[in-house]
View (cartoon, rainbow, N blue to C red):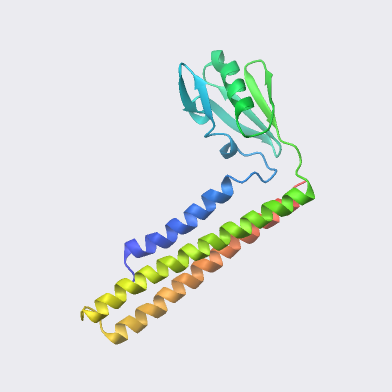
Length: 183
């Protein structure tokens, strides 16, 4: 049987993959795209999410409502200086970010990035498998587990790898569909 720590390695690989995909700009405006942008306010730098409420008004518009209305201009300046490439629009005490539609060419580029990140995750899963097999092989050599038990563990491990790879593929295809269907 696989240990909890061994199982966790597969879960962490999937979580990392999901996290990587969340930070891709797919044409849909989501708060995760801006929440970590550093904002210079109060003589320090803090992530935007610590200074304001961020919400998606629709698929292409984010609304940023600072907790302290006196830092609206600080947030605006930091957003303009960021690599986001979206000009902030200040209206009263809130800031709007209007994301343009992605071109078909850009969507295809993003899909390629999604596929590359999926492949990186599959490589990570294979590496995890090899590390676990190495540990088990050592235990077999030391007599902690029998040859039969090792063979059974290999089958269990391969099933886990296959299931994890299928899950990665499902996530990738769902993200691809989302990217290509946005308009």
